[in-house]
Image 1 (cartoon, rainbow, N blue to C red):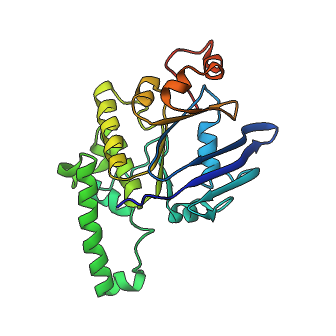
Image 2: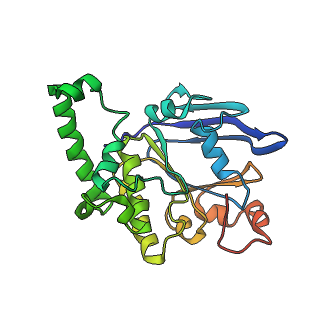
Image 3: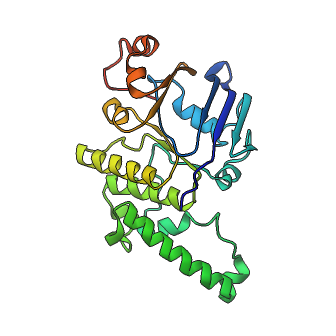
Length: 262
């Protein structure tokens, strides 16, 4: 289901909101197969950077190249179709749909059958429907919700909805998956389950970038850490290198230890 090898290149990516510079000249490369953490103090510009990369807000300046394609300023649905897929801080599952239906919704950009095929139940529609059902059940198993396929998403626990949200993102066949604070609001048990899921997906070949405010979780999870402060990339290295970086230590002075914001 995953595709290794997609590289994301940021060249001077900048995002302004009026007189406020949320992202300031960020340049870096994330290669296929990596598991990267993105951290920074409150207001550092992490979610704003995701928004610039995924077309929510087109960059004010700079270039974003994904899998060899210049996606700078493309609308979100086209960027997702290229394989750069994100989750959001707030869970965005469809509460009145079952878990299986939620995951099936994630396949919509990858199917070829149209309205005609659906109305007349063509062989193309039947074949795609069968393939999607099989893939959706495998995804539900992967995220630990196999036994809740027929349960409405609104009846799940918060932690289960978070995992379903990731499952739906996986259904879109991402070449790179951007997770925005996936552990926010979870209890310790749910956090461990989420960490296990992220590691499992990574072992399966998914390239991921994870924003997370839980420093202990992120430092024990990822191989590489990017640190933003006031929109600028101030550090890029292994968890140990970043934790000992004077610029990073200075950025967190006066803030609650173990917490990084948006």
